[in-house]
Structure formats: C-alpha cells, structure tokens
Image 1 (cartoon, rainbow, N blue to C red):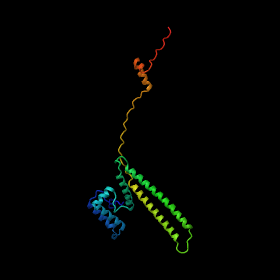
Image 2 (cartoon, one colour):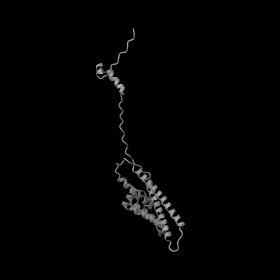
Image 3 (tube, helix red, strand yellow):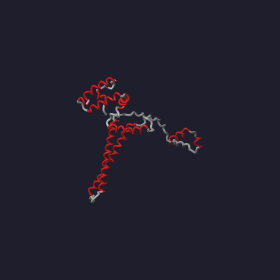
Image 4 (cartoon, rainbow, N blue to C red):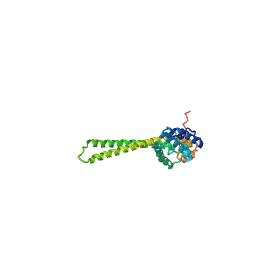
Length: 233
C-alpha cells in the first residue's frame, strides 16, 4: 500500500493548503513534460487525489488502506479477511468468551495447508498425464487423444497457478493481522468449599454406645459391655 503522506512528504495533520502546496511542488519535477517519470507522476497524483478527498482520507487514516491505491495483493488479502470477519460477526458466542484473532489465524493456516495439499494432488495428476503422453504413439492424421491429454495437462497447470495465488492472498491476509491481540474475559473463580469431616461408622457407633443408657442398649439388642473380672484377693 502506497503511503500518500510519505509520497507527498506531509505530516498526518496536514491541512488542505499544505497538501496542495506539496503536490504542486512535486508535480513540477515528476511530470513527464518536465523530465520526470510517468510512474512517479501517477503516484504523486494518486496520493494527492486521496488526501484531498475527505472521505477517502478518513477511511485511509482509520484503516491504512484505500481501494484505489492499494496493491493488488493487499486487495486480495482484504477479500480473504472480509469473509472470515463476517463469520466471526455471526458467531453466537459472547464477545470476550473466545479469541477471534486466534480463530482467524487458525483458519488462515488451515486454508494454506489445504491449498498446498491440493497442489500436491494436482501435480501428481499432471505427472500421470505426462507419462501417458510420453507413452502414447501419435496416430496418423488428427491426434485426438494427444490433444485431449495436452489440454488436460494445461488445465491442471492453470489450477496449480490458481492455488498458488490463493496461498499468496492468504499469506498476505495473515500478515495483515500480525500484531493484533484480543482481551478475553477473565474466568470466574470456582467456589471453594471445605468438605465437612466425615466420622467413621465404627467411631460413631462407639460414641453412641458410650453415651446411651443401658436400658436403650438392651432395647436395641446391644449387650452392655461386661465388667472386667476382679483380681483375686
């Protein structure tokens, strides 16, 4: 993406008069009639057109991109991100409960791997077609099979180039979201309750037996402990 401020040598807070002065100064030397370069003059003019349009300038200041000045690869990256951002917006989970930036990175990485695997498959198909072409003897007259195999090899080559361009666009989209971070909601602490001490059944039974009168023990069918025999006098 061309930086219009850097192109015209301006600060970000330059007013309309400063933008016009900078353009006129550079246009004199950049114009082809003055010995300048056509491409350089077009760049200067494009930067001036952007900054003198308040709407386009505001969009560029907010996003860093302008569709009319953006590099073709940048535009492809933006198109990739546009679809993925729509998916995030439609996600029903509460904002802050998941990391959409991490989700974007995972999706882009998965798409790159899928396209690379697709290229490997296409290259295997193309190699098989070429092997058939090498073994196929050309018949006299119209080479029907040979023409069909060559056409198939060409279509596979075009599909490979298309997948490679798609990988470039995805990698550009990945580069565009570098440096972003997302703040997640802190997880609510789990309540900590200390477990009540458990009393063993045998210990509880002993305590009950020790505290209960003899009548209650007899009623319950529990024999009262016998007295220890006295030692012989």
